[in-house]
Each structure stands twice: as structure tokens, then as C-alpha cells.
Length: 432
Ligand code: HAM
Image 1 (cartoon, rainbow, N blue to C red):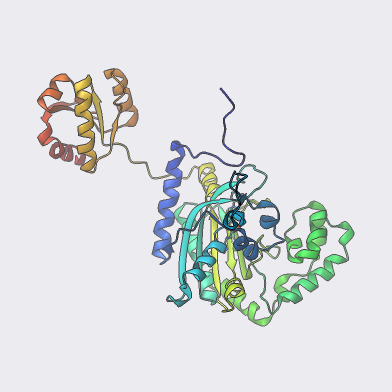
Image 2: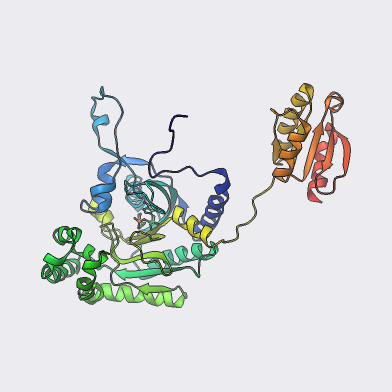
């Protein structure tokens, strides 16, 4: 066979794994609705400037990881086709675009949005790091109080609790300051790190010019001793940012949400102001292995619309959460088994069987059937494997009489029933 496989960094989620995804989706949908968030479905691709302007030109996501889109045709001439389109690497930029495009500023504030779906980053694939991965994202737009930071962190935490992960994870939290103190923070860090420039890794040397905050995030061994002596952002915050951060932490204490003050946390997207946080597995300090992350981005919407609009949100990496659920053997609710398995013998029976599939599924029951198989043995094997509660057996005689044999696969008893009375009898049997 020719070598045929999925593109690097992408994967199929096979039927046997859907049970994890269904579990995750159910928990998420229940929790976000309980917290009053409304679902928004955003496009998978946008004009690339939507991402570059929001996330920041000097971030890894924009510099190295954006997937551009082009039509595979050398006849493309019109302007629309020449526009730079990119696959979304995250959801916040698109959510903000949608907020502005649809005049959500005139809705009752804050606007609470959530979304779920695939994101794309051109990364070096490895376990837990994919080029196509899935996120749940939550954005609360139009509210600047520390209580709204606490509310979204509470939502994040409650999702983790319902997933059975509360003893496995911890929230790292920091404050990054805002436009009033950011310049001072950058200047102080630049002054400090410049003294050690020669000894910094090449990434840090470059970032010293473009984004000195990111030096705090470096995991290179050679940079660690230098980082250890660096000024701390929290000490450089102005009074308002300090007060805001203090209040957020007090709310988290009140809610018993476990967190670590992580003075090195800066996040890989440029739009954050004030509160920034990440979820990680307890004991896991690897680079780029966070299970989720978020924070406040009070300056992003004003950047497009001149109207200051504070906002806060987070995204959870669903692929990584599922890996964690699996490695911790978290018990999932059992998947629903089929109610009925239909077994037919012969051509006339096959036709009758298909009519019964229609009738039984319309009555709201799950059916498993293998109309392509002829042997009774083979079909019984399918019925037993599927663990259906009852089998309906149709031979030539039953098909002509418009009747079926109902076999109870739990106690082995069987009876013959007419098609007219089938649904009523099934209802009785399946509620036993
Ligand atoms: P982020 O930290 O870039 O934040 O991504 C959130 C989560 O997505 C990460 O913590 C991680 O679990 C997952 N993730 C990221 N890249 C990959 C990858 N290559 N493979 C697997 N999982 C990955 C954001 O995206 C922000 N939009 C979050 C946010 C919302 N901030 C405010 N609102």
C-alpha cells in the first residue's frame, strides 16, 4: 500500500476515543451555561492581520507558527484571493473581531462568550504539542473589576473539578501591569538583563530588543541564574495594578482555589495586561506544557475601536486535558449501549429489517444492525460485542408474517411479536 498518513502534527480521533471527547464536551457545556456564557462559533480562518495585530508581531505564534492559506492555483488574480488568510492559532483575536463587527458593545455588558474547536500552530510536534489541536475558550468582555477575573478563574477551576482533575493541577498566576506601568517594567528589565547580555541564550538576546518580559519565561539552563536575580514584575506595578492583583488573590483565597504566585509567568501572547494565569499539572514545569492559560486584555479592543473595553478570558487545551484524564485513569460515565440489535436471515428479511431500523430509531431507541452479513453466527457475534439488551431475529417466515422474534440477551428468553405491537413491547422490555 502507498504510504498514506495524516499530515505531521495532526491526528485522527478514533471512535474508541470519542468517549473522552464526549465527556469533556458534556462537562464544559454544562459548566459554561451554568455560568451564563453564550456559545459563539468563529471562523477557522481570518485575515491574518486579525491575529498578527492582536497576538503581537514578535511572538512565536506570529513569527513562526501561523499557517497561511492560499488557493492551489496559479491563475489567482483578484484582490480577494491575494488577501493574506491564516488558520486561527487561537480564539481571542477572532472573538474580539466578532465583538466589534457585530456591535456587541451595545449589548448588555459584560458580554460572555465561549467557543470550542480546532486551532492551528506550526510547532515542532511532540507528545501534547500538535499542529492541529482543540481548545475551549471563554471571553468575558466589558468588565474590568478584579471580581470578573476571579469569576473566569472560578469557571476554569470548576471545569477542572468536574473533570476529576482537582488534585492533579494548579494555577500559576502573575500580574503583568498595564499601560501606565508597563514602560517602567520593560525599562527596568532591559537595564537588568543588558548587563548579562553576553551570557544570555540567543532567543533571550533577541527578545531583549523586542519583548524583555519574555526573558523571565526562558527555560534555558544558562539563563536561570541570571533570571533568579531579575527584578520582579509585581514589585514594579503601580498602585492600581497592585491593588487589582491583591483583590484577585483575595477572591481566590475565599473560593479555596489553589494557586502559585509565579513571578516568571508572562504568557506567549502580547495582548495581556494585569492578571495572567496558566494551569499546569502539579510537578510539571516543562516548557509549553500548560493545560490552559488566560488573563486580562484590557487594551486590545481599544486598540481597534478607540473605546477602552476591558476583557478577561482563558482557553483550555483539550488534547492535553484528555491525555491527563487518560494517564490518571479518571473514571468516565459508561457510554450508552445500543438498545436493540437486529439480525436477519435472507433477502426478504433484510428488507423488513431496514423498515424496522427506521421504525425503532424513530421511536427513540438505538439500533445496531449489519445488513450486509448473512450468517446468524456472525450477526450474533456483533450483537454480543455491542452488548445490546435485546436482539430482534427475523427469518423468512417472520418477514412474511410481519413479525419478529425478540430475544432477551441478558436472560436468553425469547418470544414472537407482531410488528404492530413491537414498539410497545420494546418499551416494556427496555424499561425492565
Ligand atoms: P494559549 O496559552 O496560547 O492561550 O493556549 C491555551 C492552551 O492551548 C494552552 O495552555 C495549551 O493547553 C493549548 N495549546 C496551545 N498550543 C498547543 C499545541 N500546539 N498543542 C496542543 N495544545 C496546545 C490562548 O490561546 C489564549 N487565546 C487564551 C485566552 C483566552 N486568553 C484570554 N482569553
